[in-house]
Length: 107
Image (cartoon, rainbow, N blue to C red; front, side, top):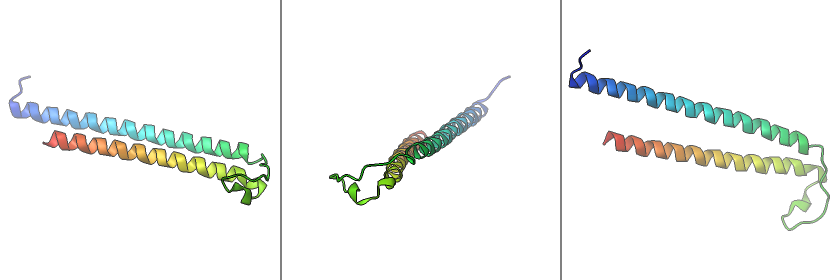
């Protein structure tokens, strides 16, 4: 089959879009799986630490104002916040990298 230049360029662009779409779908699947795994890990940590007790001793962090049974909730909240920040930073980094790649390829 013989191609002319216009047909070849359109075929290359079509294949490039297909490859990019598959790559984005793969990244979406990975992020979704990571989110589900993180959710289950947090629920597991919550169930493990929910039955433990924390001593009512004073500390420099101000946690001595809390009841003894609240420690697991605080730990779960801190872990959830940290993981949320990490996921947000990774997504922003990914989007910035893609926007730079798109602007370079459009030029």
